[in-house]
Image 1: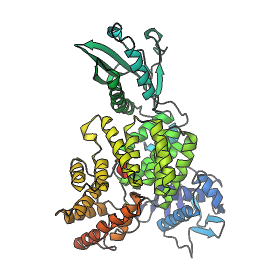
Image 2: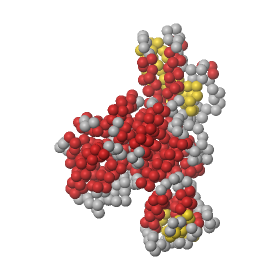
Image 3: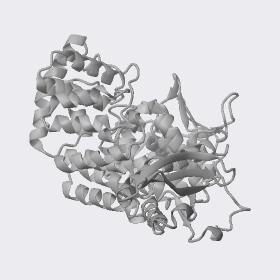
Length: 558
């Protein structure tokens, strides 16, 4: 082996085998679960073959120079030692050099590839795709907006087409994840006719005078094939058409642009050839992952993309979100102060890279919120709203954060705006509305909203049981028992969940800034959890993760 550089094959370390290409560690009893940072740390120590690796060197390589506390390093070392069964007092594998760093004391040797095990990164995992194909940044989808067809209104409303078009362009320009191209005359279409790409689309709008009203027909099509991926119609009042223009803009923003991104994901090539291709592939994988292992693989894919393209700002927000939320709530209890510290540092870096991206502003706001920095959180939330008031997901994130900050009137107004940006009834923000009613003391309304959720989440069920407890509902004990069972089955934290652990977890992921709200929540929750755990026979020593429960994906649990 060459000192200072890890090979791509299999390495023997004592009774363990490390597959560097496939990112797996095998022990006497089979595969050993190892987090991404612990795996990177072990790889770094192996590369030096017994030479001292300083703390500064580990921070610059394992954490890619991201500013984190020293406790982050010690936590990862502890995780690695647990995986190897190493005793820090009598180390066989990892020796601490006080105040300086660590070294690997067990000799290592390279092995030939075993039959049935990959010796090179030939798999199709998101992280391997990101590493191979993120060399070029690429570009987001293109949306071409030609002049509107308003010939039928030239005599009665000669100005209306131009007004609507300028409003549409203004709204669409707020979305950073598309490239907006326009012209001023129908004859001046861009010279793209011979170079249409998979991510090139056109928004066409035609205005028609019909029986005393104005009909607006809008559609989005793929420039390469002319396939229509979205179409809709809006009716404007002839007397005061400008009053209905905002609703038209909201409809296009709410329904059309998500269709563009869905269509891009649907037509992704087998191998993404740029950072944006990997970005859309990762987003698709993140949407469909439903286990902790799958979501951690997505996190590694985001990490790989950022390692290849550290200036690619769109990749930061989804990774920050995974770090902050138990990997999309697929492994409850897995987010610790280490992950929160990583998310906080990434958010600061990302906002410096692109302060005009609303998603980076909202994830930064949540990082400050979880850190108890209410003032900074509010600043980022206001910036996000100013940057794009037409993006539903960002509005929901801001509205939910406002609830945790105690700004309930503002949250209510934002939820009302979200209703106009929700194209499908099944996507209505019932969970967020239920939380708002709960905090306003409207417990019956909260239960009614939450009962309309077709796929309950850990957070929505929590809000429902709190509303039931506050109102003295007869099914309160049943709700608590169900929530405890489902939460314990999904629990992946280091400590088995008792009443104190679960209560702390709830507050950890629901950062109410008002102490009275926190005390009210604990007053209802803690004794109920104790009773439910006792009734189910679960104790700190007995509770074990078993199965799975629908992860919380709404911004209320963000």
